[in-house]
Image (tube, rainbow, N blue to C red):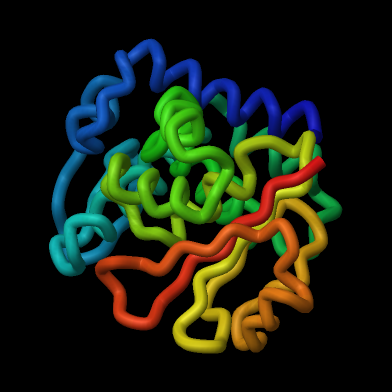
Length: 212
């Protein structure tokens, strides 16, 4: 992993640990010395406040808050400036920053200790993705991304499918699964992939693969 990105992610995890892994995002922002408010849109303001939109469901507001908190942590730690400088060659800096912020927010929403605890109970499986989403109060999509990028030391990939079509995918490597793609027949292309039918979403399935 790029040393700057590794340091950036470590900073987020260390800051969360220092705040005793507070899970309420408003309280966490305050623990970091960041003002927290509710408004029409979710934004990290130039004067250091995190504003979360009042519309949307609980999970979406929680995810929005974590995302904007990471923007402020990145600014306070001068990581945003460093990324702009050291990663100046990326084709789309805004998309690059947003992707890094998403991964940082995943760390706040789903601390590594929690992820490891869930994996210890359910293994590196599609069922673990679902259980993580329930334990951390996040969407299955966010839980899948967190599981996929838990480590870069092994191939990790997964998807959510509705019926026979993939609606979301995430991977830390090349993956044969992509949104809009047809779910392959298990006996043909899903060797080693665990499947779990979502109990709260009709006709939806999680697939997950973790291997050396």
